[in-house]
Amino acid sequence: MLVDYIMENKRKFRPAPGIKLMDQVRQVLHYHHYAYQTEKTYCSWIEQYVRFHKCNKHPREMGKVEIESFLSHLATNRSVSASTQRQALNAVVFLYKHVLDLPIAEAIEHVRAKRFARPPVVMSNSEVQRVLVHMQGIHLLMAGMLYGCGLRLMECIRLRIKDLDFDRNLVYVCMAKGGKDRTTLFPKSIQEELRQQVERVRGVHEQDMTRGFGKVYIPESLSRKYPNASREFRWQYLFPSKNLSIDPRSKVKRRHHVLESGLQKAVKVAVDRAMITKRVSCHTFRHSFATHMLENGVNIRIVQELMGHADVKTTEIYTHVMDKDYSVVVSPLDSLVKNKKLDV
Image 1 (tube, rainbow, N blue to C red):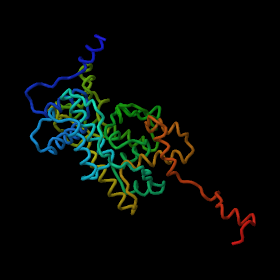
Image 2 (image 1 turned 90 degrees about the vertical axis):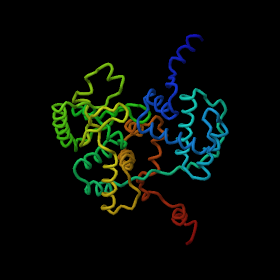
Image 3 (image 1 turned 60 degrees about the vertical axis):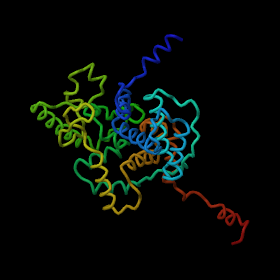
Image 4 (image 1 turned 180 degrees about the vertical axis):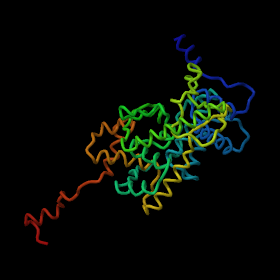
């Protein structure tokens, strides 16, 4: 028991005393290796939580009642979705558990936002083709990766040179949603274009090295173990940014990956030009990948692995939007008429 207590307290990170609350939150988020986007989102929710209670109280002086009123306000007055409300709850619980070291012992009983189970938006094969026809350059290549590999938007954006296995026709997806790694298909139809992209990245990296740069972000644990890894070509982003930028955390100037907004805008323009009225986004390519795989007779367990789903029930949602052949199904009314049990 004593060993467990010591280890538990070792794992806890105490923010530096005497600094502002939000700076403490950022310190702890950074310590727990949360993504920068998650850091910004959590900080935003915590600030909204503090501002909602206009009583000049420190969060230490608030608790279960204040948390419940804030979450209920989000559901009743702002009509947020269930996932958005859950995100706000996670941020506030993180504040109390990891920053203030005041875990909420009682269950939070708030007005819950309604959760609606909606089927995913899926494009047909012809619609995918029409969208891709109206794209070009690097955005066409990235959209091909989304559809051909079943990648999420940020999984595609964050791909590195080392993640492409041309010999085995595999793409390695590292640190995906939930911190999980997986392998997925590598379409042969875009491999030649990707080889050319790799060579373009090599040229950019060599120029950066000549100018005294060439570093790229890698996880801190790896950077400590391999100090020179951040300069290696294999760690460079497959889709690097055009310009160098300063890392908001480390303040180091280096080349990051492209912004996701560029691909999002390109997809929106292509969808409009293709005159598709469905609500198509970058994630729709991933939904279409899974649905078309199932329609082609691929085992659902294999699709589950390619998509990186922890539970096959998540994959089963695509069976509801598959293209089904209803021509072989006979209406019960037709059966009655055919068997002369009913005269219509």
